[in-house]
Length: 65
Image 1 (cartoon, rainbow, N blue to C red):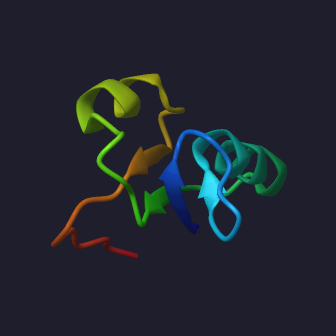
Image 2 (image 1 turned 90 degrees about the vertical axis):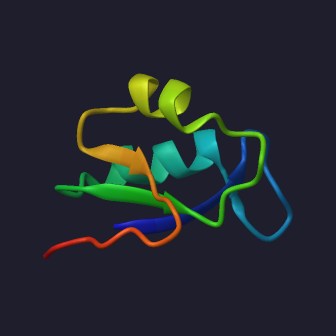
Image 3 (image 1 turned 180 degrees about the vertical axis):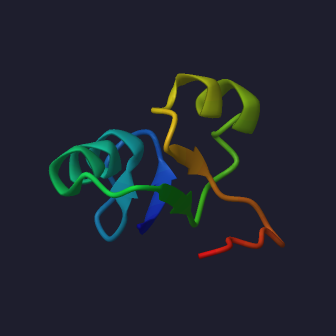
């Protein structure tokens, strides 16, 4: 599952992190990647707090399916 997650707080046209996590919890995908990220996120800190199957994506990332 790929979801845009622009910042922590809700945004008028994009998911906030907590809204995106609610969608992930509802849909229960095998893997989830959050994209369209703002500078608010420290990748290492946020990824350490996310469920094991979810992570912040990064530029140039290749996702094997």
